[in-house]
Image (cartoon, rainbow, N blue to C red; front, top):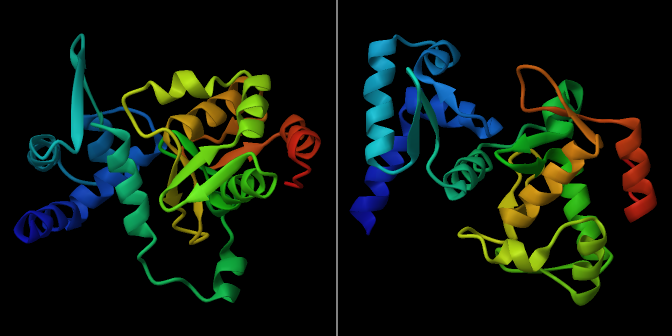
Length: 224
């Protein structure tokens, strides 16, 4: 176990491979040429790193025509990368406030919502007794199941998926958990489908629309 953990840490800790994993946190699949540009390395060097990540079952590859698309092999890999970022030394509050890029405010973490908005949403769901937080997981209350159903989110169907249902993912900027798993993914997709959120180009940052601010206020009394 100890040797396996050390091997995995060494695999992820390589700067090129760490940058590949970080780039994939936006939830999209990338071609090798796109990743080579993103992480600033040669196609030959990138190919070697991709092979190691695939062999370790951290990445998967899907072939469509002449193209190969690389993505996380499973959501848990994304959660692990985000959690590792949470181990980085926190910047002084004054420096963080001064910089305050959009990605700190509201962003995607693979397939769920993160940043200040994602953490505030999760904490509000708990405070309003729609979710209960126990250890590394969240559980919808009876009230919460009805509330999610009214939004068009079927909790029972999501529980049947072959992945975590509602888990806590440590937010690397807020250092507090946000909601991940199939429930977190369903909420984020709902927000995109209903135009509460809008993606910003070339970044994981997302914009809360006026419609989204009204929805947060009306449904959860949450000011965004």
